[in-house]
Image (cartoon, rainbow, N blue to C red; front, side, top):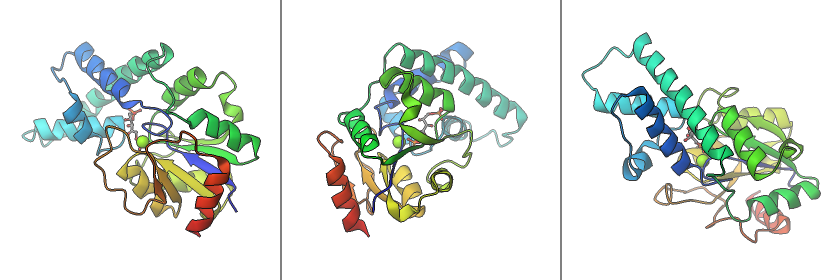
Length: 236
Ligand code: XBP
Ligand code: MG
């Protein structure tokens, strides 16, 4: 039987990536390094999970001549990521990001029915707090008993680490859970952790391959807990 729901954050709970993109560009401008990412480029770069990893990947693309990616590069990436995180947090606090359709209703209904709820994301902890405080309220933590993020699971999706740690902290078997994702990397991470996964793609991930998903839906609008239980029963 279904006992827990595990949610990705970026792209799944909320359409966050335009705000992440703007925050990256703000950090690049502040640091004066002359990078400027647009939507088509960022869509490609999203294939690398994690903001720091994404910038390092881009650095290697534009500077293939620089083979020594030592301390200086790492320090620059770390500084850019601090600026980016601050810019993103401020944008979220200002209301730049909303929850996707059906998300809040499903969270409330699942909680009311006694399902455990968890978060498994590669993003930074402050980003989650800013988003969920703004979208759900200061008591958002009463819904989510477990939150695993970049600070606790450093190996980013498609590595299953963040899901495995979430399952361990929930102390619930994978077969009693459903995961919610928006991307191929997220789906891969969840599937490797043996989780049946519902995928709600968005504009940045619509072209991804979602083979292995339990369901692919436009969004969670109108999806009931009873419907989730039915899909989950079919998965086992
Ligand atoms: C989300 C990410 C994150 C965000 C940026 O992936 O990859 O890196 O884009 O956040 P997922 P940070 O939804 O699969 O968890 O800069 O904090 O990494
Ligand atoms: Mg995602």
